[in-house]
Image 1: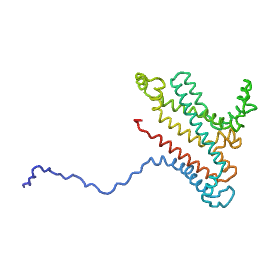
Image 2 (image 1 turned 60 degrees about the vertical axis):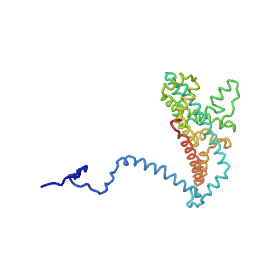
Image 3 (image 1 turned 90 degrees about the horizontal axis):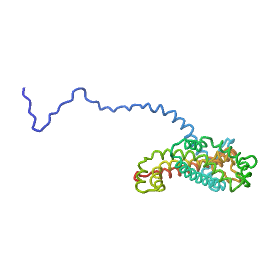
Image 4 (image 1 turned 60 degrees about the horizontal axis):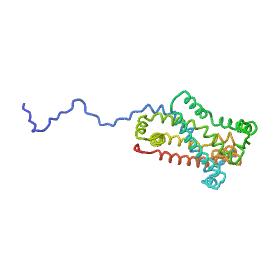
Length: 313
């Protein structure tokens, strides 16, 4: 039996042995990882997502605690909020506090981290001392400083009196109450900024400093052209955290001044608490919460936009 010869240059094709491959679509396999994240998703949905949606619905109603019927008012709460001078005062106080505390704790934290970069026994002790206030809660810190600055029993006024200085009314003065709260806020949070920046500084290769020194760069030039560019991600992170935390100011003013004197330290969250949990106007308080949410979202988006930089920068 003779076989037909193949044309020159034409490859011989062979049929694959075994059953033909099936063209039916493959069923997607269930990923068991979804079972592990399901509890977290449920918690986020119940305790975060659902309250956010509910507060948005409440902000569109005249929602007063104790009433059976809640009248739909649309954007009337937001309109009233726009003409509310006390809300704008609270927003101004919050912005001033946030800007001052953010700048203070970042600059002071950077200075402290630069001084405590070398690890010795006394730098380790100082790091612990600076970081310790950050561990304590804001309420505890506020109560402690309220007693320290008390004109009758406070240690600060007692020391100033012994030094021959007339102690001012730290928390009762309309001109000193907010700066005092700002100073306590910086003292409270500077340790966190110091630790983050210190950890970033210790990741900078020493070769960069040696190369800069060989090129004739002094201490300030090395700090400006080597340290600061390397710390840019850490600086943006600490600035973002400080800004968002400052915009949510409540515990410190609640424990130190309760928003006084004459609303000079009343923050937006303090005003929200007053409207929602003292006057029980939950619809109006929800409108305040949503305005603050939009402000924090806008500031966070701006910070994240600024954090996009090229490696060549």
